[in-house]
Each structure stands twice: as structure tokens, then as C-alpha cells.
Image (cartoon, rainbow, N blue to C red):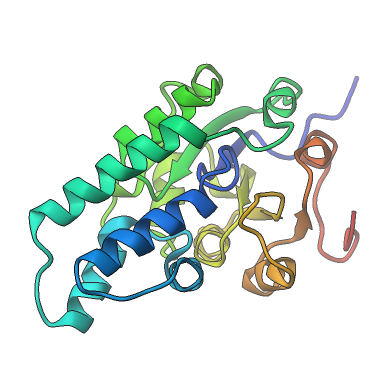
Length: 232
């Protein structure tokens, strides 16, 4: 009789892990913020807000500006992202074939809004792998790097945190999953990733870092132990 895998549930971040959206979103976010009087580059958006919710990013910006951004800001940000994603959004390389090889249950835990998560996965043809198990930071009190979203997703999927494996591309995401008591694989295969990102994800708590989704099924089938697996 074969040994069951050590994890019952794999929790995927969405942006930068399932869909190659982060580079596109950083440009849009920077352009719209600059238009509304907060001058910032796409690289700075990447550095400061990657993996965090738009709600938290907005609150931080408003605190620095000393004023509330108008409702038209959020509407314009969403409309521009919708247009750009509709034209250019693609799935992360090899993710569809990888999802088809996993034996565990899977779900999404993303800093995006429920509408954005569903739209992104629908645009890239991945929605069928996850629907209806799509969980958003909007459903919890505190988004990443707090553990709330990961614990919420595990509870909704009736899985103990110790039996969850999380795939994340950002330091806030890895930090939150690690704080939730889950094993984390860092992913650096998105077009937004930079040299040194792997080291940053490890420092935040990732047991291992991969840059190719085709490596995931084999890893998910074995116990990831920091002392036993240090590179792949």
C-alpha cells in the first residue's frame, strides 16, 4: 500500500503564482497613483506592495498623503487593470499541466478581491481547477502578512494548518503562511521576479524555492523538511 502524501490541501496564491499578473499590475498601480498625486514607480510598487491587498496599499498611501483618495481612484484602478489584464494576462508557465497532476485538494488564497480572483482565473482558463474554492483577503480582518487568510482558507476546506502546503511568491505571503503553521514553497517563476527573491522568500519562512511549476507535483508528494531538502 502506497504512503499517502503528507499534505491534504495545497493553497495557491493567485497573482504571480497562478497568473503572471504582478508586472502588469505594478505598472498600472504606479501610473494611477501618480495621476492622483502620489508619485511612484512600478519598481517601488513592487518593492512596497507586492503580495498585499489594494485596500492596505491605499490606506498606507493615504496616510502619507494626509488625505483620502477619491472614489474615482479605486474605480479607475480597477477599470485599467481590467483592460490591461483582458489584453495581456497569461497563466504562469506550466501551471495548467501541474494542476492536473496534483492529487491533493487545492484552493486559492489571494490578496485580490473576489471579483478580481475569479476574473483572472477565468481569463487564463484556470477557474475550473479551483471554483468554488476561492478565498480573498476581503473575507478576513487582516490580509497578508497576517496569517488570517490562510487560516480562513484551511478552515473552509476542513484541513488542519499542519496538513496545508502553500505556494507563494511574495514575502508578505510567505510570512503569513509560515505564521499560520503551514509549510511554504516559494515561487520565483513569474515575470516580475528579480535576482535575490528566492533568498528573501527563504528568509521569510519558505522551506524551499522553485522557479518552475513542473517541480511542484513531486515536492507535494513528499514531506518537505528544511534539514533534508535545501535545493532543487
